Amino acid sequence: MYQQVCFELTRLATALVGGSEAEDVVATVVARALQRPGGLAGLEEPRPYLIKAVINESRSRFRVRGRREGLEVQAVFDPDPQDHRHDLIEAVLRLPPRQRAATFLVYWEGHTAVSAAHLMGCRPATVRRYLHLAHRKLGEMLDE
Amino acid sequence: MNSPESRFREAYQILLQEAPTPPSFDPIVARLVVSPKGRHPWVRRRAAAGALFILLVVATMVLLLTTTTTLPSGAPTSTTPSADTVDVSVLPTPPELWSAEGVGITGTNIGNLPRVVLKEGGLVYVAGGSQQTVTALDGTTGETSWSRSIGGGVVGLLYADDDLVLARGYGLVQALHPLTGESLWRLELGGEYWPIEAFRSSAGVHLLLDRPTDGDVEPPEVLTVDPMDGSELWTTVLDGVDHPDLDLQPEGSALYDDQLLVKSTGALHALDADSGEVNWHLRFGAIPESYGRAPLLIADNLVVVPDPNGELAVVDLADGQDVWRRSVAEGKVAAVGILGDLLIYTDGQGIHGAAISTGEMRWSEPTSRASASLIEDLLVVVGQGSVKALEPSSGALIWQIDTEFDLALAAMAIHPDLIAAVAEEGILAVTLSTGRVEWSIGTEEQPSQLIGGPIAEAPLIEDGVLIVAFSDGRVAAYVGDTG
Image (cartoon, rainbow over all chains, first blue to last red; front, side):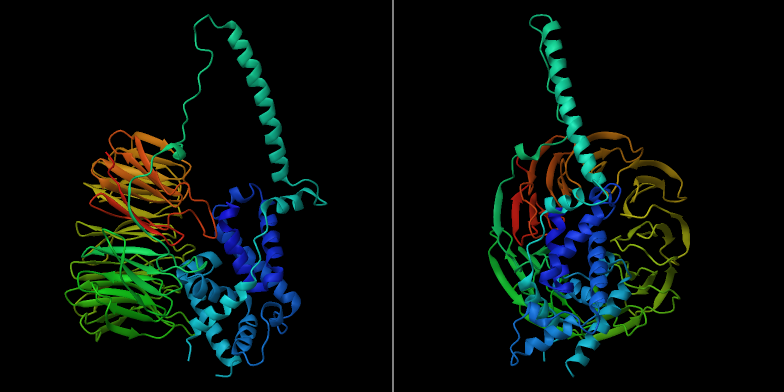
């Protein structure tokens, strides 16, 4: 079962905390799931459970680092001042984790609002609200 | 200017270049072994299982030695118990007609798997992938007939018939000519509109849209357009229902007798397809905790409304009044079919037969995570680890096959006496009358960067040919009837 979800979890963790911490986030949440009675096999829906756990663990680390600090762009992207993508990456990395998770699941992984809501453990309207807020914040940060 | 969606995708494409290899499972377990709290229960169970296995081996050897020495000459010394679970590795694979690699798929964008949606005029339409394309494959050779880039993150096809193919992106609907892929018209709805489903009636093309939100929940709307040019004919906002959750449910709506039945998580609306006028609506109760697909079932002027939140309602099609409703176990709630006065449905606990006129329960069969279909005169149930044929009126078991498949997708007819039991892990063909397993597909695929098994969705079956979309982007056609 782990083999079926590990790549998805790692991609999500990379989008939320960066490549340097992603492996540790995934290992941490899987280890916690194994400590539950019945382990991974005992979970009714392991995939949404683990995805929610990755988001929560990322939020926890995000809070520790401080919201303003966000992720270091240099850690994930070689900054060329002339490259417009530097500002884009920085703006995306400054979004709160849930908004970033919603945009990642919908715009990268291709989920609908309904299926992303199922994975995130919230209502589809909440996912669409996260997307709306992320659009607005991205526009503000890029001075549009 | 790039759309917000494309900018997010650009950002994530860059971020994922630094994605590490997923951590191996054993080191995670090792963390638990050396944890200060002592050995983890899972590790202890594994160790205990190992000790038990050794004990069983020793005991078996002793038993065998004893038996061999006491059996009369000429008697069999032992018999291998028949395997209860189907060994798919020894089953043949049906003849492959054609295979198309990587249709609409690039990289590891797993959410945008190819979707085979319909076959019209000899073409198979496939949509999805980060290439944001719709592709038409020749149904007899698998060769690409045409491929059209849509943009806007295509996540599926909305509709296809002999003269119209509708693709959806984020905030857009694109109409294509089914034989050439030529753009017929395009609706730019705005990036936060979500086209969920489309139906075509004599009145036009009905587009079911979740609407943009600005902090508040906005009710969905139905936009009906002229199929010739996409011009608006009427729009109805599905308001008037005091409910905090009105997101449209995929595959939850239906068109029946010029009445459009639109199902959201909070209500079912019946609209006049010609005018858009709301004939009636049915409000659901609590805010749903799950959002599974649960299509309506309509027969004999009744609508069976399954709600994944744990309710099953049977209502009068004419006025939306309840005939009966009951709470059901949350999970895969689906109305399977109606046979005489018997309604067959599944919920999170199993499959059930109830009188459709009164709701009186007739029988129940526990099968978790099941998909079921009425095929010929039997009820075929693909569930967690088994395929069963039941007698529909009583639920009596006719035959059962145990499999290693866990993620059931569908039970489908290939021809009247051959069925396909479809799970994400693979497809088994079973003779309906005998329960004999004939062949399997997709079972040798190993989990890769894709979630779930190798089968992306239930196949398209036509004239005994199965067209299967695989999770790695391949689409293949197989001859289903190998007899």
